[in-house]
Image (cartoon, rainbow, N blue to C red; front, top):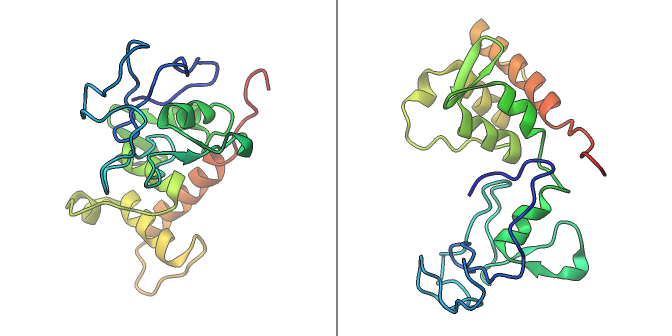
Length: 185
């Protein structure tokens, strides 16, 4: 599932959505998800609820998310939740895409994996796993340092490369979180 861009219409809300995997039925009369086999409307298996690929939030045990735009809607499925991000973006993804170079993002003179940088910008945390690239990439090192000590930290034994990368990351964070007004809103 990709990100919804401004002005892009969400999938029709009338088709059922699987509360475990988030896949929407292709026909109106479908009763079971063709991906995971659960009946539409059934709660997901334990620890199998979907995660939003836009904001990285995990659905609740019922497979739904709190509505971002209208609390009276209550809890909504993944498809509706993703569509709501057109009105409630997590950051300026168009700007971030303009910095993209294939699977990487260039932040001033540094590059890092695009998905990891976007996840950091949205969540404010680094989850690099066991990748050895994290140990050798100045921008990713800066992400970990900003997450741990904040954007204005003065570190003992700091390296100029890391300080410069932290400053570049802070500038990116400031710019990314200045979401431009939505078109037509």
